[in-house]
Image (cartoon, rainbow, N blue to C red):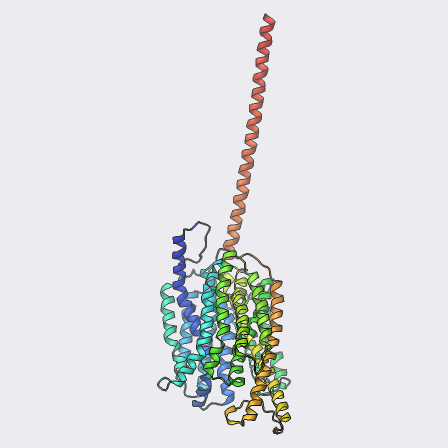
Length: 575
């Protein structure tokens, strides 16, 4: 398989079909790797309470099991993106899958919550590698214009992993002869299959750089900054370890900002920066990052808080809650597939990004009207609209960035937008969670007081409670408080989506190139210019030659006429 899928030479339908089949064989391995990576985050959503209970863990350890993976995956994304520009992408992919498989194996063997947290860090490193490398590899083997054709497959994988994960996790913990450990072990066979497929089918060109020097200092600084920032936002808040305004905040936030500042200073001076600053100075990339943060908050927020709404406010089981989110995933799947096809046909991405963000903003606004007693079919329609917007915008934002950079910097550019989307989404969800908890607590306390039910001093009835053990009157008030508070989060999300829409409007709507590498596209354009100039020069030369020939012919004709006139005159004189 070659590095490019489009060339200047004409191709037949048979060649195109063969190339399409060849790409699909490779995509099986790539998307399978992406699927197991995404599944690792969703499959434990419903199983985690059982896991922590069996390992005698605490509520704080419960949070750390999730946070550890999030920290590791987000922190290593820029590093693996840069490594993909410097080293063999195929080897890096296989290493990433191997790290993920080892982390999954060890997580399933954990005998304590502390061990599980440590092994989840290993799994998170593999997860971060796969999230970055799969998209980078796809960008290496498929040109931007043709990439839209395959966006639907990626959307299908994302939708299926999101929907099937909670269902599969709930099934595993409910089956006695399986148990929670298979939530981690079930990914290993799929990961091994992906390794075999990629080892046999994937062929990518070697990096063009001959001298390789990894910016380990920059990688350390950005990892430390991200870790400190996510730790702060994960444990801040009135219901967490410390308040938003506290000495911990005064230390951690300035510390994270200082580390980010040092990172930028280092990146401006090293030969091979983790994130080349010129990429961030490119207008399309900067605005795409802003829009991606808005999309990330909406995507992560919807998956987290809609499930909480269905379970706590409406009283559905985790499995039923997962099924109720299918409309959103269906909208994402259909929209990503259809928009991808049209992007390939017309060669433009901006109309679909703008249209997608308009639809996503509208969907989030509609979800902002949800209350405790809102009809389920109406909620389903709102989720469908939001999903359609997500599907049209999410992958096309990545495509817009990839279209602006050469192949030599594809890894850094792709991982940058993935990194900021994950970081923004993670932080946004934590902040939204704090707003949600505060609003639920306040509303619950007010309604309990109005109903004449005493509230304990310092309590507000909004904590994490097993509603089945409460009196029906109290449980109903808490459910209604959850149900009537959820809309506020989606209204905030709609505001962020509107910011993303404004950013998208100012992005350059460039045509998608038909070559994998930007440099090749520039070279082809230059060759076309030379060909046009040569043709013009040839035509001009021919025109001049014809003109000169015509002038010469006219002169010869005039001379002949003059000679003839002279002969005629002489003859008359003789006569």
